Image (tube, rainbow, N blue to C red; front, side):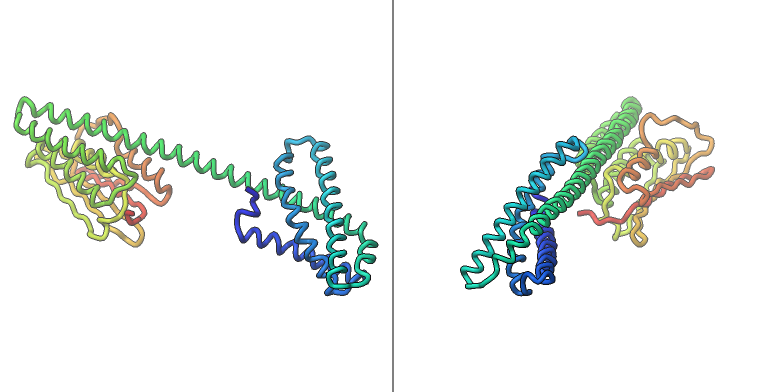
Length: 353
């Protein structure tokens, strides 16, 4: 569709520009002592509106002969020919309009002064056609730039979405692998606990698969997920694993990526509590300051614990997901001491829709 016809504002601006040109042409007729102001406006304004409609066709001619691709000679000749034809049609239409004015309003000496100005009118028509061509080439270039930018943006979104899906998909087998190891260790020593853990694990996986298929969930839903996860791990560790969850009520309805805290809580259990003889407490907190959501996971740890290489994703996964989703508006801070480990996530406080 013609870009000028897409919006009313663009169409109005287009015809206002042509009316201004018509006013200038009327002034030219007045200052050359051809017509009075009233007669000059009566002649030129209808003529210029007709020519404005006629020059809309230059858009399709510009599309047929794209600049930068069409050879110069093949570009110049069609537009020169079209400008002569359009100007001739316009000039003859103007002559017909003047004859109508003479007959309808019984005016005298209207056609004869116009006939003396026909060469000038024809030349102006050619120039206006070529000017319209330049304007339409500019519009086409701007339209192509917008299309190219939109396609580039869509490709970036697709690439970002694919990367986010990959990062999120890596979490599930990572967690499942470690949970099955936990169940395996309980089958011989405590079959009843292994059975209970299997049931709780199945319940957790159903919920995580449901929430994991969404782009975002609420903080309340995310906290409920990690509560279920920690309930599974408490079967394995018993009294050694204590849980403390503190969620500010105003943060419950804010949006977060699903399974964002799960790798952090899992690391707190595997690399913190699991290496302490007396166990410890995994604490999860959420709070809000101004437009920022704060999520904190901390746990005690043994400085002498063996340093194990991860077999999947963890803290780096969380960093990557937040960076892909929020850019520089999100950050991950880690505080570590001899017997303490804390991860703080800061991301925009956006209500969940």
